[in-house]
Image (tube, rainbow, N blue to C red; front, top):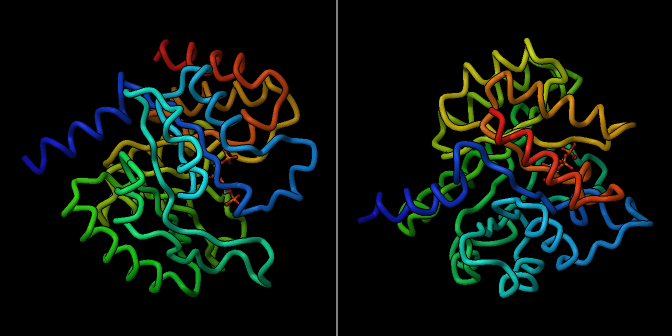
Length: 256
Ligand code: FBP
């Protein structure tokens, strides 16, 4: 029974062979002031996700409450439990637990998302919190998507392919059902990331690329390296023609 429910929820997220999620935690992580000309209302983002053919949306619980009644039945609501702002002196150390698994479940989460800054000084604290969250997720049959992001003094650049490979592997090892991490920017190095991550791997969109074509090239390269799909933010909802662009990504996904 337990596994069946979790499998059903996972199936909803990983529907078809490839997953397309919209990520929208940026108003917390980067702040609304970072996007002065963008309408950051959660419903606008939800409409982009639904109309563009995504199969799920990742949001904090407050935003999730606003959009949940709008979302179609077969669409996955993923609630992010951890947060940090960019107002602190070092935004790369830790994300704290701001929402409990029970609260997310009550609001209607199909899965939860949890960020770990792998390699940061506070890594142990995020690991400890993760173990508590995982315990409750198991009881409630909720899948966990681990946002596994390198923040190591050993690899100063967070997009260093070796650091990304390590972080993604850690996510699989510690029990994430799905891992999400950065694209390395290079197909060959990303193949190694995929190879070493034994659970489905989703790719973040990253900072807005100069051109739409550059963004779509990254999408193609990540897929041909073996990615199982994407959780895209800025490169979709911060661009003109978000819905059409998301549809283009969906078409590319269907070719793999
Ligand atoms: P993007 O597609 O915009 O990169 O969003 C994915 C994401 O994981 C967001 O959920 C998160 O806010 C952001 O990336 C974090 O990026 P960074 O670690 O570079 O601040």
